Amino acid sequence: MDSYLLSLLQLCDSNLPIGAFSHSFGLETYIQDEKVVNKQTFAAWLKIYVRGQLVHSDGLACKLTYEAMVRCELDKIWNLDQMITVQSFARETREGNYRMGERMIQLGMELYDIPTLALYQDRVKAKQSYGHPAITYAIIAHHLQIPQSTAILSHLYSCISSLVQNGVRGIPLGQTDGQRLLQEIQYHLLEAQRLIEGLSEDDFGIVSPGIELSQMRHEQLHFRLFMS
Amino acid sequence: MDHWTGFLRLAVQRKKETTIASEVFHQGALKVTPAIYFDDPQQPCFYLMSLGGGYVDGDRYKLEIHLGEQAQMLLTTQSATKIFKTINHPAIQEMNIVLERGSYLEYMPDPVIAYEHAQYQQNTIVHMNPGSVMIYGDIITPGWSPDGNWFCYHTLQIKTQVYLEEQLVVFDHLQLRPANDPMAGIGLLEGYTHLGSMIVIGERTDPELMERLSESLKCCSSVAHIGLSTLMVPGFSLRVLAYSTQDIEKIFRSVQKLIREHWFGKQVTSFRKY
Image 1 (tube, chains in turn yellow, cyan):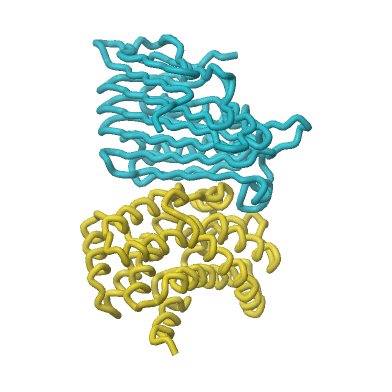
Image 2 (tube, rainbow over the protein chains, first blue to last red; image 1 turned 60 degrees about the horizontal axis):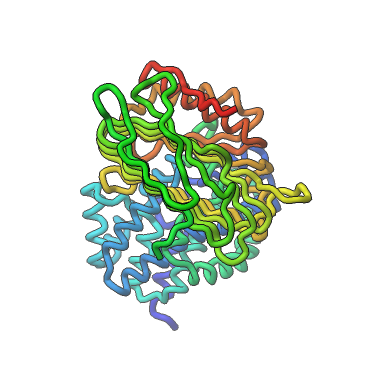
């Protein structure tokens, strides 16, 4: 059995206390617009969220960070942190990510001894970097010797499993529907991971206009369960 | 590869109470009109022209725009950027803009219209210095095909990066590939056809301006889907989904008007094209 398995399960548990339950990343806007109303429409949203947001931002950032860790190119990681943060036009999504990033770095520091993560935390404290969960995840995964492809795929899964739980609460849906969605999305996550393996820095940050617009419009919603 | 289908370098500088063109160099299929002054001697307006009437297979265009300290410029195009069929190599436009301290640029090009099978890559890099102001807006249309169908182009890729004092502050990357993704679908264009993006950066962006913008944009919600959010630096971005270029232009103009009133107590300049 791989020695990293249990650490990996711990890392992508949606109960990881980094605050993911507070962020819908625009899903709530679709719920209030009555475009995401049931399992079927939520499944369509999840698919486009994977392809239109996760692949070219969080997923690709995870891969590029992992590669930079292998080559000890730390400047690349700090650049990525800047890119992935300013890449979002939506203030709440940016804030959500750097708040989650900061908490994940802190948690990583409590659990492991990773020099790069300590540097990352110093940079965040000195306001030289923002902190981002995808980058933090890759740094920890590299430290745990989780293979790159597994790291990318499991990070995609952890993003989606949090969102499915938030959707179950927000739409609302039954817990069983939530589990079915998590099962059905697996194929799309595998496809996304394969796609990410073939991407380079030039492809970074491509965003789906509607997804991003929903994240920008979330600021204007009157009643909100989520912070983004 | 240093061969460009069209190359243009335009620099302006402040001279006493006015801004003048200090360098105009063009080669190949790109040209620019002489400075036109509307109401304000500080603000010359320039119209970019592509001589071929549109971009074709393998075309590569490069534009360099430089605003000296305290200089001002209004920049637009003479007509839409048309991208014709590009089967082998995408048409490419690279644009570098430098805004020195205290300079002011409004760059509002006409929309991009991509024809059937068109591939287009646009890369814009802006370097801003303290006290400079940029108002930038672009529009992507659903394109054009002989049989009247929309979204028949192959790929539109628009990347815009803004640096403030060498620090990356905006990274916007859009890629529309109608053959791969259903454009009208959820998450893409949400049933709309036209996409407008506006980036405004200026130190005088304050909560009052944002409040006024958000209030004034409410009236457009029947014709467009609008997202407005502040950037990491003083400034904001606006994303608009609508059914026509005119609707987006109207929204952009109302934003320009508010900014000009709020920041400078000025009226908005009409480019007087039509």
